[in-house]
Amino acid sequence: MTSHCGLFLFLALSCIVVESRRFGGNSDGLSSNVSEFLHSADSNVEGKRWAVLIAGSNGYENYRHQADICHAYQILRKGGLEDENIIVFMYDDIAFNVYNPRPGVVINKPNGEDVYEGVPKDYTGEDVNVNNFLAAILGNKTGITGGSGKVVESSPNDYIFIYYADHGSTGILGMPSGDYLTAQDLMNTLKQKHAAKSYKSMVIYVEACESGSMFEGILPSDIDNIYVITAANANESSWAAYCPDDFPSPPSGFDTCLGDLFSISWLEDSDIHDLRNETLEQQYQVVRRRTAVDDLDFSSHVMQYGNKGIGEDSVFNYIGTNPNNDHYSPSDNPPHSGLTTTPHIVSQHDASLLHFWHKYHNAPEGSPKKTEAHKELVDQLSLRKHMDQSIHEIISVVFGREKISEMLNSVQSAGNPVVHDWDCFKLLVKSFRKHCGSTSRTRYDMKYSGAFANMCNAGVDISRATQAITQACSANAPPS
Ligand SMILES: *[C@@H]1O[C@H](CO)[C@@H](O)[C@H](O)[C@H]1NC(C)=O
Ligand SMILES: *[C@@H]1O[C@H](CO)[C@@H](O)[C@H](O)[C@H]1NC(C)=O
Ligand SMILES: *[C@@H]1O[C@H](CO)[C@@H](O)[C@H](O)[C@H]1NC(C)=O
Ligand SMILES: *[C@@H]1O[C@H](CO)[C@@H](O)[C@H](O)[C@H]1NC(C)=O
Image (cartoon, rainbow, N blue to C red; front, top):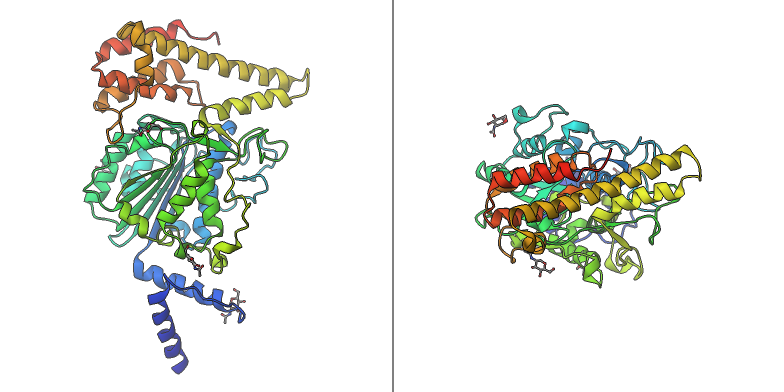
């Protein structure tokens, strides 16, 4: 009885200082038992942690997005979250893909361990779509079709972490099936979630090209309990890492990139640190530095949106912490460890092409594999060319040849949304995808969403534009 009381008093006092103090000296070997206990104790105090993890792509050439997501899952589990509170969206065509040299295994860095084991298959294949993703965030079970039905059933004291990895472009994020996710749809969902007062605070990490455009100028300032970081600003690419022929490169046999630069930066940082002792702002600084390679033509600006005050929260509040990292000290970090060096990188759009090139290049001369890979590569190239030609034609039909460069390249100034008429934008993006890019798993058609945003901003006649899209796309169609 007395010993229970003693223990209780000790823990109660410790809870108060747990954010600022470590359990130094582990000579008794019990410190991890204690922190594990505290861990569950203070998650009771703080409310639950929920997480939604989503890879928006499919195809072996996009290996890295699902690898990022699986890696994040492992961190959350080691951090103390339960499966019932982690909702995973991934197409799930990587681990057992015929091209995977290690069947059943997914890695997220060259010498990395398996990150696939144990990942719950809540939403896979066609169930990874906009509707299910948004319904899961809202906690709307009746809005879900297929999948495990797991949704964020959060209470007002709970913390929510959302992590998205995929291709993106101006105003959109990719999805393996159905429509792309537009910034407007995401924003409406966040507003609804906020209005329902069903969480305490939410953190969103987004890896995608032009990911800043999902929030720039459109996340309302009265939503004061959301904090976001994105891999790139509203008008630049994000970057793949651990790609073939680069340093460090994947083990031989992997003709594909294993990770993305922004993603591996926060994931590898979270792998080793005591996240009680790291704030979101500190993690942002680490990730920002690693993602911005010296030459900014070949890297991206990590951006912050929403209530930056939340940056003072510890990362632990959202993703827990691995008890094995409790004694990590910054000086343990050797100066040239992977955490401070930036691997060579490849733009998101080109990473897929790199995969097809490697597949072709590495196939034995004269083999059926070589023929198949050759066809795949040529198809990819002509599909891209087809879309490049079509967009030029569309703009010149609708606005005149002299406007091509302006429509393709102009960007809104910081603080402004990328598009004002979202209905116009959605229609044109969808129409272009349907007529020009529907067979393109590599999402090259996304590249031109910025042009459609500019056309909508310039007050384009929508029916004239859709007609031009249909015509240009069918005229330039590559022979199939
Ligand atoms: C502490 O944890 C270790 C490993 O989990 C376990 O073997 C040991 O029995 C625990 N000690 C106590 C006192 O709970
Ligand atoms: C849940 O989804 C269903 C189907 O889409 C919809 O009719 C309903 O209004 C949604 N409920 C809430 C609370 O958003
Ligand atoms: C916690 O972080 C601060 C600043 O990063 C550092 O100075 C301090 O040594 C850390 N404490 C422990 C116990 O790791
Ligand atoms: C577009 O990119 C430039 C250069 O990277 C940057 O200065 C500008 O703020 C960006 N605009 C937006 C809206 O992010």
